[in-house]
Image (tube, rainbow, N blue to C red; front, top):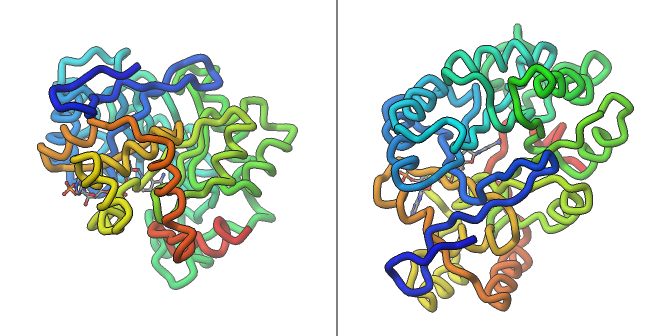
Length: 315
Ligand code: NDP
């Protein structure tokens, strides 16, 4: 369902998708990565006032307390907001402890979606327990012979019966990793969602199709290209934006919804927080033009932590 806004062709999104749990997830969610404490608080208050009903955070972002406070202070009832947080790599062997910390910080009884942030267990006693910084990340990655994400997910599922997560899922999972997870006898709950980097420079159509076949909702993170929003400099996107008389950001976000994915734009700028919730109904031919962008120069991954090329993106 879409409601008409003041400007012609521009709508404030109230689109949502059904999860495999039966719950609904709002298509346009609000990102909080790289927001400072103050920014996280004020931007989440502003987002909820603007009409977002889906907030995406993570333990590693370090801003769950501010996000939780903003949710409380917004006056929007808890049950109207879809809240996601994520297990960090250093907690793979005890994910429920991570969830307890997240819930405490958020000041919430439960989250709506709890994701394994990366399919990579990290050594909690490694060089840099929060964020490995050595060139290939390998020193801080727990060897697969000791632990893997299948074991993590087995524990993560327990949160649903405990009532601490309404649904569980994954993030940064490739098709290969999803196949491994789905084939494991310990996997009793099909992940509700897979949150991955998705934008016109990295459209990942095969991954979207695999998730669709398996009833897993796909969430597009860094939809504008993350820091500095490089995606918005693409000439095709700019041309389409001119035709619709909207910004390239609106086209990037609308394209994600046209593809039936969740999309998680982040902004700490009041005007952008508001405008990123407004989308246009893209014509199929324009959606297809955007699909072609990455075919010209090849897909471009912009989020690339040190361990990822070795253990996540190599299939
Ligand atoms: P985005 O692609 O959302 O881009 C954010 C950047 O775009 C910021 O610099 C922001 O600036 C700018 N921006 C926002 N709106 C506009 C606009 N309308 N016009 C021009 N520039 C704009 O990046 P993120 O990497 O933050 O991704 C979004 C969310 O996805 C994250 O916040 C997080 O919640 C999630 N995520 C998940 C990951 C995972 O591993 N699961 C990894 C990365 C992100 P400003 O804020 O100054 O307005």
